[in-house]
Image (cartoon, helix red, strand yellow):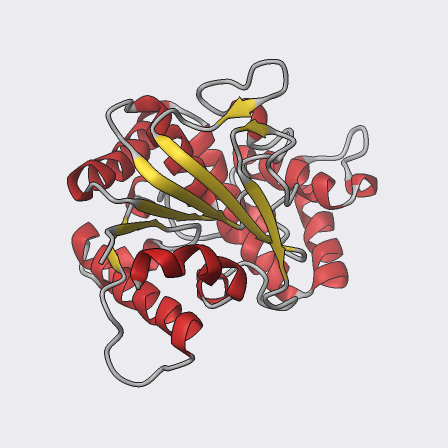
Length: 278
């Protein structure tokens, strides 16, 4: 069976806590879950032990953790700025007004999110904004997270890397930062890589003339995004990055729009993964 490595997304620090402060334990718990999610998507079966589709899930959440998860109005200023810019991607009319404090803006945006998208969107923002702010803020957290993903890819030598959510940003930068890494196929799921004013302009390497590019070590890049995924803005990456082979739109669940469980279980992902797990 082909070696496949996963790269997890936001909100996964609790696996580290549950594993008693073990990144390896957190990664193994996630690997077993990802195997189950993909097995259900491929076969429709949930009973019994799933095959080892994923050799490992690269774990980095412990490098981005800066304290207890907070509601939007209690976030640190960098996270509130990400929150405001991200919400502006959803609807430009909700951007801040002159003189409005960050705390007041965060509170107003949280109320708007509940009304527009439901409480799940606020829970998503609670995880997404601080972790994106910490990672893209640079310094040691970014380097440690990126290198942790690179070390897993180097050690496993996968043919396929499946990167979800913020993990697509970390994987993208890991491939660029470590030219020795390679993969036959990179699949990004629910990726915010193209999100203007939040992620895209802050990538390393910096996009040139408004365009990023497929890392040299990646032979093929497929991007998959749910039409209702509020992290995947824009949902298509080909207009932003040279070398994306296909943008695939799917409809996994408008209430559960971003989970790796639903992405790995959807036909859009299965089409590209099935040739590697047969």
